[in-house]
Structure formats: C-alpha cells, structure tokens
Image (tube, rainbow, N blue to C red; front, side):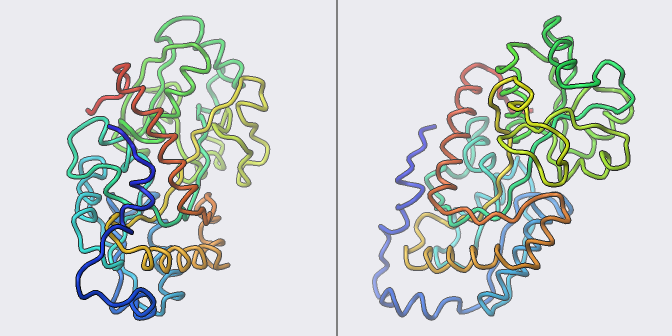
Length: 326
C-alpha cells in the first residue's frame, strides 16, 4: 500500500466546511468539550498506560477533560478505523504507533489507509531489547547468540508479541543483520511470551523495556543487547547491537497521537503545540520514566518519517512472505 507523506501531513488542510468559523476563532474556541483519546488496545498494556499519563497531562494544558477510550481488536485496526471515520473537529484522537497505521494494512484489509490520518506529535518512545533467561548457559552474550543463530537455519527459537508489531519487525531486522533464519514464534502480547521464556519454552524474546524491566531487575532475564541507536537509561550497562560491532538496527518503539487527516490545519497546529507542552510536563516525564520509557515530544514531521521508515520495512517483509496475519 503506497504511503503518501503529503497525505499524512497535509490532507486535513484541504478540508474547508461551509459555514465554519474563521481559522483564528476556531482554534481559540477549541476545545469546546471533553477530548477522547482512543487506545486501540486493551487496558493495562504499554499503549494504554502511556495514554493515561498523556490524558492527564494534556487535560492540564487544555483546561478540559481528556478521557481514554479502549477499543481493542484486529491488531489495533478497530480503534483506528473508528477514529478515521470520526468528525474531524479535533476532539477525538488516536494513540498508536506505526504498526497500527502502516503495518497492519500490509497484512490484512483495514477500514482505513495511512493517508486517512495526520500525525500530531510523538509522545513516548521505548527501547527494544533482546531477552534470554539469565540461567541459559548458551547465551552469556549477544555474540554467543549470534553464533548460535548462524550455526543452523531455524536453530534459534525467537518470539515476538504478534504479527506486525515493532517486536516482530525488530526480529526481522536482526535476521537480516545476522544473515540468519530463526524459528519464529508469534504470541498475542508480551505477557504470554515472557511467561514461556521464563518457563524455557522459547530461547529468546524481543520486547520493550517497559514490559521486560521487572524481570531483568529480578535477575530472571537478561537483556543481551539494545536493538536501537542508543543505550537505554533504565539499563545503562546494556550495549546496543552497533556498540557490540554487529551493525545498525533500530527497533525503538514510538507512540504518538494522530487525528483524521480531514482535521483543519489550525486545529492540528493547536493540538500539536498543546501535546508537546504536555509531554514536557515534569510529572509526565517522571511517570514515563517509571514505566521504563521516555516522554518524547517529536514533531509531526518526525512522526511522518518514522511512519515512512516502518512502512518501507513492513511492505518489503510482506512481499517476501515474512509478514502475515495469524
């Protein structure tokens, strides 16, 4: 599916409803009621937790209630489809990563296309790590794992949190980097995968620091490497794949807020500024750090670049037959 960056960034500016308020007046009178952040996943997961701290901080900035509405199902496409069809008045936002916007449509039919959304701001990023059991003598280092994976096709049992997730795409990136083929095990979320890793049913798991941190701190699991461009503050002693001499890989998970692309530009600009102010709120910064992630106020342009990069990776993986819905 083609991804038109101009569609992601500017389509909303083309809509001008007859009888609408003048641009400046409309932005000044916004918001006129409570805002809704649609989280396209179940309560309790990483996106939901981020959504709740964003809602609190954004409500303070706008002086209006912001509620979280969980609409899980179909890899996030149910909630995303709802937002794509909602009135483009700035009062309903989607909290999602690139997987929901550009990867899921590569795998299955969705009630939206990437161009149906306008990115407002990134709000959070979390490092991806490669996990193994601390008592697994085969993997004392990332180098051990690389040698093991290269020693035979399908020899390494590697898990991810579901087709099209950032975890899955990180796995594909590492296969490409090592020139190895893993036996891939797909789970419906990090919880079941972590349980099986701890129980010895799988060799390694690709996961966000937010989900894995408690198991790492307890000593049950070890992070063999950070799958991203920089060390993670929560795991300062864990090196990146690049620092270990194996080349570049980036499985960093970004989450951001989007609106229907038909939303007028003045409202998008007002929301983007408010969101970035909220993300820099000290309380939100602390809350994100407590989750093992980082409050990150990325611009609409940066968000669009991330969507483009993940779309390029996922579309190639789909063409190669490595990205399929369960």
